[in-house]
Amino acid sequence: MSTDSHTSRPVVRPLIERFGFPHLLATTLVLVAATILLGVAAKATGSGLACEANWPQCDAGPFNLLPANLPSFYEWFHRFVAMFAGFAIIGTAIAAVRFPNIDKRVAALVVAGMILTPIQVVLGRETVTKYTMDILALHFWTAVLIFVLFVVATVLVWAPRLTATHVIGALALGAVSLPFHVALSPLVIGDITDYSASMQMAQYGVTLALLAAVIVATMVGRRRFERDRLTALLSGTAVLALLVVFLGRRAVMTFNPVLDDLYVGAAALLFVAFVVGIRLVQTASSESVDALSP
Image (tube, rainbow, N blue to C red; front, top):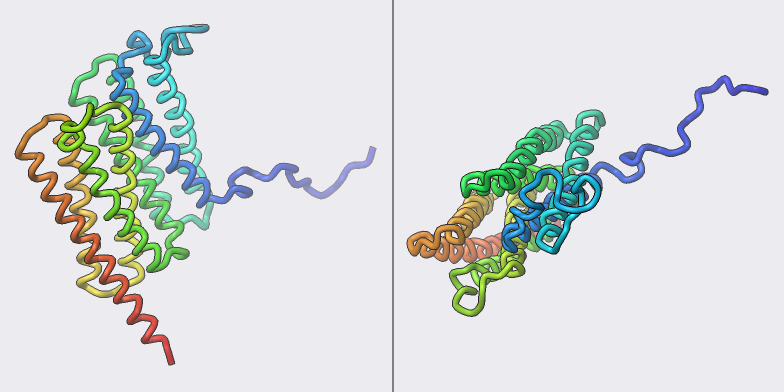
């Protein structure tokens, strides 16, 4: 039997080479967002202590690995998706470190997300075994931090393909998201109907969209434009968005009238900043086109 003296190439190319790192990163971001929203659903339905407070097991099937009822299913499915998100985070971090053409800033961001992942897993376990409001808050904000890290990394990877149109679109998304963020909060929706699990998931979905929109607008805007007033405004929207998300979360948890007023005021100011930002980007884009015209 003859042998080939040349080194044979693998028949199946590695997944990362076929799929592409930017798409792997974007998929991981989607999984992180899904994990957060499913965690909100588990909390909102009171399912966080389902599975008979077992972790990582549940309350049915072989070795108690499966859910026994609907509340347990919510918690079990949250853990199930979180597991895939964790694997995706680790895989993305390994790829970012091993591939030589990946921006070092991107690698640092996803590695930071990977380091936070086991901390998040431990906090998830503590929400089941102890369940205190402080642990619940840390679990939530750690998840949001991981989400933000991966949004920033994703924007860095895709930034060369993003234009002023994307900045305007991101600002418009932020402007549309804000009224829904306020309307879906207990401050408003509580006067109409219950702050149900579906309402909570919708509001936190809007929260993630708002954060992503601000990050895209700020990072791409600062990359595309050199106007001090515009870049300062975009940076200001990022600070205001974090304040709105924080105050919105505190208003939900504490029902403090002072925090409610601050939340509404910050949201109104951020909405104005979005509208002004859209106008400034449009003006800057028009001037750039005029400057390039013969």
